[in-house]
Image (cartoon, rainbow, N blue to C red; front, side, top):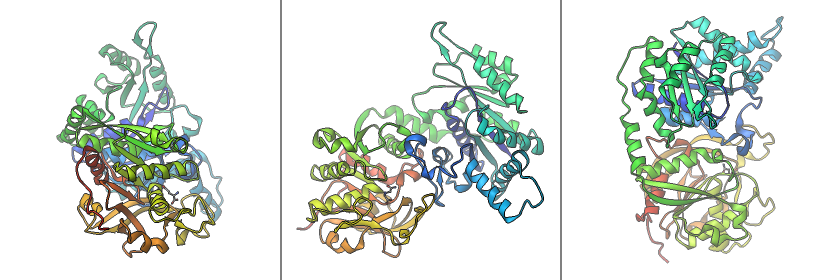
Length: 538
Ligand code: GLN
């Protein structure tokens, strides 16, 4: 069993995920099978019920788990689909323990954090390593060393190293070195203390990754090596770079992959970073700027739509286009819609819940339809597209979704049958990967290049089939449905250059080395490529 544990020190928010995910990308490029798990200290069972403004987006896996957005980062970098087994919280672990305790599985014993909870953490790591036929597993410990709520996680991985041996469990510790303006230098002391903190918990770091906002001179690395005892070639600088996709290439520039393989006593194999280098070339070449308006309500935190932002950006790079994303507050559109939407090459509406901003989104849909602006709608966005079309083209002035007007007469979007009667909130939506069949005479089919697709979902409402005939008589094309034809999955407009919407979340399957076809299509339409499938015959 070969495990790399990633811990963080000094500050939170310095990007442990990028270190872990980049290590994953490097090792994967040498042909190793990589798995990852993230352990978080908080008590929510999963992030599914947390506000994206507080915790960032909820990332959905194929098997329908609502996970931490870091799982998405790892999927993108190691280009591998992960599952519920990758995302663990104290809440989820305790839930399991309480269930066991009530069943009597600990009968006669006092259930304790260090023995029993740590035992569960170790089991989760070992079991899923074996189950995934993994070569190397990456274990990220949330938070910062010294956080009270993560102590038991640090203790669990310390025990693992003790049990499995130094050549099987290694530690990468990420630290931050602040820049002091007065003396114009990077200061290493907080990083030194953070290594001490880790040592006090019985863990000797094998590799130190050093984050800074400035270039890091050799003497800083030398000092850190001297003061922490980490070998000098294992102190890896990680200064802020222009693109997050540069990080794996930069790390491998310091032979990080070779160092890790050597520490783990694994065979050295050639690392092929060529795909990452090509991506970097595209990023360099992307000088033409195209503007996308993202019309939503979580406009203040980029992390709230992280996968979507990255999906759009990498689709841009693939076309040598630099995407400039602007968040347009849907509520403000309600007041002054045309002005706020002027000058964009494309409009995107992401998924969402709740009433706020809905009328603004409907206006954005109308604007994009009438002005022939390329337009991609996701989940809630696809429902908005149906409402707008029903109101302004089909003539149902009061058209709405049951989510926002429960008693409405013309709810073209309504609660899914199997959702009726569900009262609890966590993990109860239609979640995870579902298959969809595409009409070969459609834009969706041309973009995907295949008749059957599978995308990830996270919703409770769906297109109301009672209105299907009315829609299909017009130029509103239902181009993708569930395999039994019952659920509407993809819709598009026939007389528009690029107006397509999906009930699913394509952003969860877009990868930097393999951008999603819907996003690539949108960017091409923004460049002026003619995608419109067929003119509507009046
Ligand atoms: N609120 C809508 C629903 O539950 C859309 C959800 C979403 O966009 N993820 O169906």
